[in-house]
Length: 134
Image (cartoon, rainbow, N blue to C red):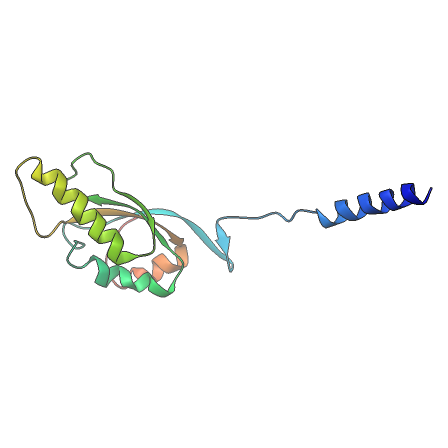
């Protein structure tokens, strides 16, 4: 009988401990996070100024998801990173490699779009740094 009561108590405890809270993945600190596709005017954003402009996000929650050049070569440049140096270096390397296949070369790559995961609040602040549409 004691074993049965003990088993019953253990079951009750396990159910009470395993209560699950609802987790919302796109909300943090009362800020809504989402993926945004930022569109820049021609060459306002390029590989030469990318790190300087996006360093705005260094102390904020964000992830660079994709970079789309103006002269798109049909390749996809996906990232999931907060490391701006590695992201832009990797992008330049892959893009220049695709140009070399066509016997072309460039030093500065104009960026048309950047897909980013961040809060709407951060984007509103970022608009003070550079003009973009989303």
